[in-house]
Length: 236
Ligand SMILES: *Cc1c(COP(=O)(O)O)cnc(C)c1O
Image 1 (cartoon, rainbow, N blue to C red):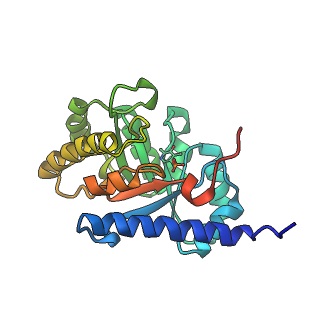
Image 2: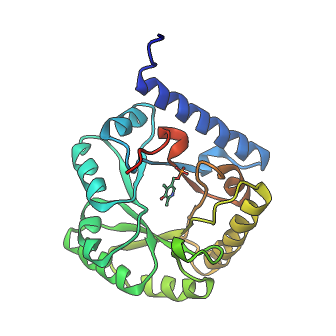
């Protein structure tokens, strides 16, 4: 039997492949690859996998479950990592999130903004925020309807310790490039309109392992990649 490869080599190889996909997708549409941030989604993968990705050069990591994320943040506090919360937001977790995470990408209500703002102020931090927008009518994915976005951006302006950065979305799953593009182009249009009123918005968080090329072609500035970096997530 052959020796299995050390897993740190596997993670580094996966990252190199993702970076090559990202660079090639940017070249195809005359974009600069430095304008797209690679966010490594490490949910349900161990701290050691995050360390390996860090050694391979990644600095931005996303987690979906609050307690799991906080445990990892504490275990890796010596590393220079920016942590993104990309899971469902529950009011009773807002305090922990505001204390430990740097970004929250899944905000959909005024109440969530108020709580995050208050707790961030208590800890003398500023939270980087994206609003989550619904694409298609898959209720399960959650997110704002398009008409709800601008009022919430206005409200966010009144919240201390909140830095509004942009929009994020999880489109319905599709293996077809044209269908993926349609969702992403739709969100990119909404983002451009918002930027006319709020020029400081700089983050359009869209694209995952299966659709990063379409997302980049549509203008994504942050792709959130889990499986293509860490492999399949263990079954719960
Ligand atoms: C899990 C997850 C990802 C990563 O998805 P992959 O298909 O594994 O790349 C990205 N964004 C969010 C919000 C997620 O929950």
